[in-house]
Length: 90
Image (cartoon, rainbow, N blue to C red; front, side, top):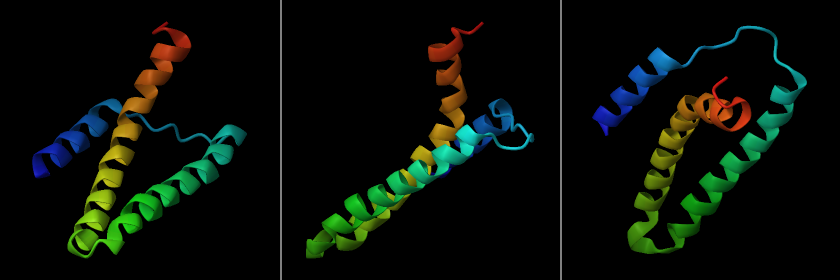
């Protein structure tokens, strides 16, 4: 897991460029949706499995871990897919 995390950090450091201009209305409209989906994932998948006594802690732990990795992958892959699907690399 440490190797995956180090790889993600290096890839984000190389490929992701942060635009420091003020946020647009589209950015402020997307954040509440992201926040709601994130809460649904953490509570829905993580705490749904806590009723099984033998898997209670591992279900929450794996859900949080996968959520952390997916959030980092989204930061890395979102600009790529926006260029592929939106502009066609032009």
